[in-house]
Image (tube, rainbow, N blue to C red; front, top):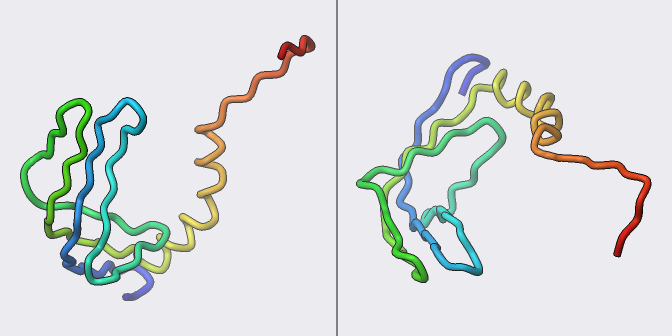
Length: 98
């Protein structure tokens, strides 16, 4: 992996989709122990997975990990905190209610 070049890695993975009242999530676990670093991208191959309400669906798939270049990794580390702050919503008021 160079300063401007990207590497591609294929990895077997397990996809878990939950569509329950208590939890709505999608998780990908790499079966070969691959680790994702800042700036990396993951593409899971295969058809769309739809979980009916109240169920958890688990499927084995293959994923392609697109490793970020050294420059992209540095940029992601430098600007990541600012992007997370965009997700925050702050409210200030003088009244306190419990």
